[in-house]
Image (cartoon, rainbow, N blue to C red):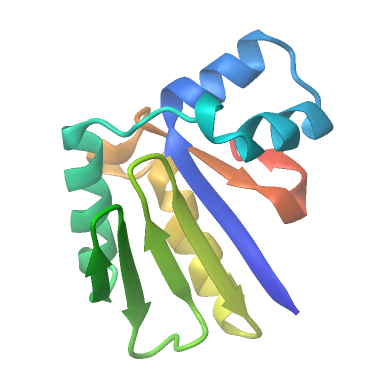
Length: 126
C-alpha cells in the first residue's frame, strides 16, 4: 500500500483553517488547481536545500516539475511543483518519508513557512 504526504505554502494551510474547512472541503479545495498558491522563491530554495540535506537527489527536471529520489529509501519519490511537494512511499520507507515531510513544520528556518497535509492521517500536521 502506498502512502502520500503533501507540502504547501503556509498561506494555503492558513486559508483553509481560517475558513473552517472540514477534511472533505480541504480535499476538494486542494484538488482544484486554481486554488493552489505558488511557493515563493525563498520557499522553493528552502524546500530543495532540505531535500538535499536529507539525502534526496534530483532525478529528473522539467519546466514545472522536479523529481527527487533517495538511494537508501528507494520506494520514496518526491515531486516538487510550483504549488506543492508530493511525497509518495511504501513499506518501511514510509516512516522516513513521514519524518522528512514533518520536518517542514518545525525544523530550523523551515518553521512557519510550510503546511504539511497528510491525507492518510486526516489533515494538516500541527
